[in-house]
Amino acid sequence: AYCGDRMCSVLTMGTRNHISFEAVLRALGELGITFRLVGPERPVVRVCSLLKKEPHGLYYFTGEDPLLFETLQDSVVICRSSIARATDNCSCIAVDDDPQVLFYRLCAHLFDVKPGRGVHPTAIIHPEAQISASARIGAYSIVGRSTVEDDCVIHSHVVIMDSCHVGRRVVIEAHCCLGAS
Image 1 (tube, helix red, strand yellow):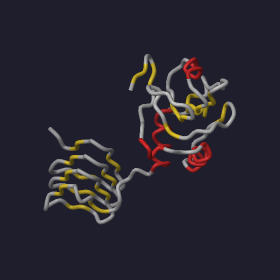
Image 2: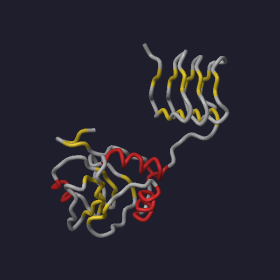
Image 3: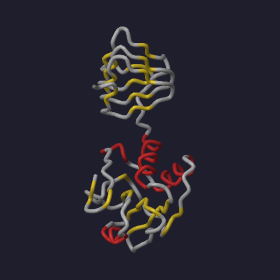
């Protein structure tokens, strides 16, 4: 989402998004993300959106104006190294890669939102579809006469039309449609 002239985080996960600063640092290490902490460690408790600022939040920022950091309360922002700075109320996790992509990778790692193995009971699968036993098909997804290979992850509300072939280890995010004209 856009927030003025910059990209801002819009990810909210309700009560499931509780985290700790230690868990964030551990996950960054597990993901092999190179970062530098600018400022003191802060008591982060949840991922937040810059559109709805909360104390003790973890945010990402892809813009160029570090004045945004002045508006946060005891929070941490994942941002580019070139603008990272600490304020009285904000620390930064400085990265050289895209902060938004890293934020989403971090959240996926922390919250493990993949569907369970197999086909969710609410999914609709065409009788002629070929679904690998190791595939994960999420809630309310629809698979037509198609093939879904080993270790695929199909998140919720995905539609795969007839004649599609989803190769090994492909991940399809929620609300996607494949094979539409």
